[in-house]
Every structure is written in structure tokens, then in C-alpha cells.
View 1 (cartoon, rainbow, N blue to C red):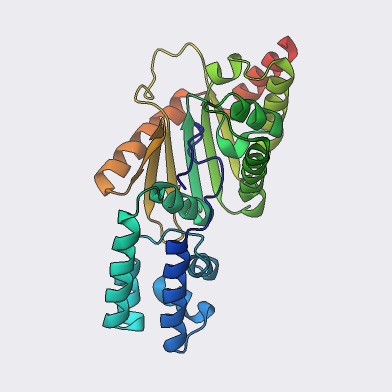
View 2 (cartoon, rainbow, N blue to C red):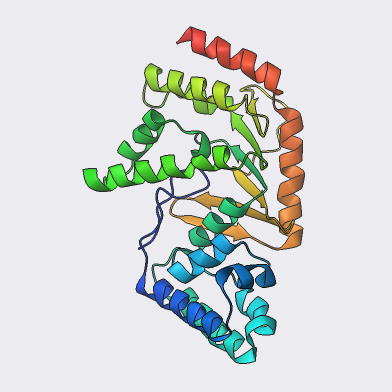
Length: 283
């Protein structure tokens, strides 16, 4: 089942487990057990966390392209070939939102996560009223049951900020996103209050890009960046029901340069707080 975009650098919910992903996980588990290794023993040899390996085996994460390469020196050449064929098969399967599955895993493991948004408040910063306003306006509409599942999934995903106090989170948000007033004054007030509270965390930096800014590097649209525990950087962009995980070093470097410039052009946290409080008082 393809995931659905919602203008926040992620999707609205975790995709349902597919038979193919579960089969891949079962194969990886069998190869691991045949080698006499536990998940805890295999993970560091593959340079992944134990939780990440567990998600592969449970069919909850789309395997990265280099997994077979990492597996071969640990589990053997045959295991590498088997998993390589399985990964290629998954990538050919129609309807699998591989871009989301990869990014979700990267985001979960990231030690640094940066976001520039010009369309909506980033998903990790959306209070429930704002999430509901976004999803209820989406076309085509979904059933009430599906809507509630998606809202719950978004709220659960937001626990990343609280659960990763040693990870660095940086957000640059266009002032126009808040001025739009999505969901009405009460929802906008909820958003501003949430930004003010979350921005007080030592590992979170929130900056507003003022509405009038002659020097602006974000003309090409939103962007996301993540740094893995191995200090690899990935980029991510999305549009209407489409997205791209950016892995090429040259392209990731371009996004890093642009994001660095955007941070220098946006208001610092003190000026951001002042602006948010003014906007809150005007509601």
C-alpha cells in the first residue's frame, strides 16, 4: 500500500506490513540464526543498531541498498547474493513506497535532523488539532477509522524528539505557514504554543523565516536532512504523491549549503519567540 504525502517530509502513517517485506525479514532471520548470531551480535557487525536489525526482520523497514554488501563479509557470499536478489525484487514491487520506508528508518536513527518547510508546519512539530486540520482537508477523503489511525501514527512519531535528547533537531519554518491560519485561530494558537514549548528543549532549534526577506535561499522548496550514527548524511524532498531520497554526496552537499544559508537568513530563536508571541497575541 503506498504511503501518502502530507507536506511534512514524512508520510501520514506507517505502511501496512507487506508479505514481501515479512518474507525478506524471515530470510534475514534464518540466515542470521544459521550463522549462530543473535540480533545483538549481528547489528554492530553490519554497523546498524539492534533495533534497526529487528525492524528488518519484522518486515517493518525497507532494506537499504547496501545491506547485502554489509551482510556478505559477516554471513557469507551466498547470504549476500540471496539478500541482494530479495532487495532487487522488493524494489520492483508495484505500490511499495520504498522512499518512505528508507527515510523513516533514517529519521528514527538520526543523530541530527534538519527541516526547512514552506508549505506546512513540519510533522514532528504538529499538535493534534493541526494534524487533524491537514488530514480532514486532504483529497480524496478517507474513512474515519483510517483518519484516526493516521493521526495516532503522526503523534506517536513525534515522540522522537523526547526520546532522543542527544539528537539535534533544527527547523526553519516560513512565517506564511502560520499566517495561513489552517484550521482557524484556535488551531493556530495551539501550533504557536507548541512551537514555543518545544523550542525550549536544549536539542531543538526553531527559527521563523520572516514573510519579508530579500535574501532567501529557499526558492526551490522544502528540504530535509538527516545525519546517521555513522555520520552519513541523507537528503529528502517531496511533492504531490512523490518524493526522493537523496544519497549522492554532491547533491546532499548542495542541500546542506542551502540549509546553512537559510538558518543564517531566518530569525534567531529570541527573535522567533518575540514574533510568535506577537502573532499569538494578535489571534
